[in-house]
Image 1 (cartoon, rainbow, N blue to C red):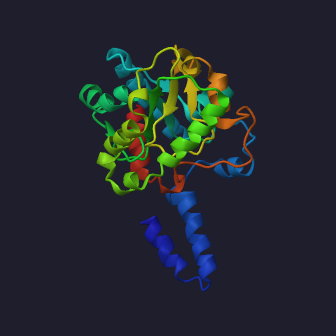
Image 2 (cartoon, helix red, strand yellow):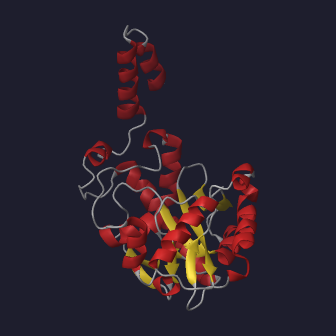
Amino acid sequence: MLKLFSRILAGFIPSKRLRHSFREFIDDKYINPIYSSLDMFLKNPKVYQPAVGYLRDIQLASIKILCEVDRICREFDIKYFISFGSLLGAVRHGGFIPWDDDIDISMQRDDYKKFVDIFNKNTVFKNLRAEFCRSHLKVCLSGTLVTLDIFSFDVLNKNMDLNDKICFSRKLNSLSKNKLLKSVSKNAYNIEAEKLTKNVFGSDLCKAKQNSSIFYSIEFEHKHKIIAFDYSTIFPLKMVNFEGSKFFAPKNIDEYLTFIYGDYMNMPEKIKLHLNLKKIDLFQIMKIKEFLR
């Protein structure tokens, strides 16, 4: 009703620019209020203040999903580790990067492929579901934009020095842009990506073991300079604190994060949210709050 009334009022404003500003003000202030300090973060990401409001609700829901994923992985002997921005947040902030809104974990391809069925059959939450998207897996909270993202990695039966890893990562980035992959449906994407990986690397692929190299799968169109690691960088996994709980992480966190982000302890000049918080409507946020109860 308020939204309709504001649109009627806006109709009496002669200037198109002022009408648009008026509607945005009413939407943000009264109809769809968002994280109150978002502008502060966008202007000054060096501020370390933790998230509040809707953004914090999204983070808390993501943590609850991670706890359920962790429970099922332990029960069915599936190895995973916190990765990318979530691992960075764990090291630099003890949990979420203040403006982050999802959680990233990684699994070897064999575990990655069987995780969907295992999770969907064994989760205690009827409103959680694991599913493939084009580039990775997601565990989704139904009716919301809250997700936990899962990325797969493959293993090469050889060691690589730093220069080899850089060249190899360039090759992976090129393969991820393969036209064949772009043309298939999201349900077939991971199958075709696995076929392409086997065609390219063939008998060099193996299970994770000493003297092997871990590399992120070509399903994910990487933007990082180095996405290949020594086995000893990742395994054996260790525990890291994330938002007050312990989860699995790579053995050498510093090397992993340095390869991906460079000087990862230095705060960025610019930040980018995955979600547009202005699109989180009241129905979604109430589903999130219900899930948190």
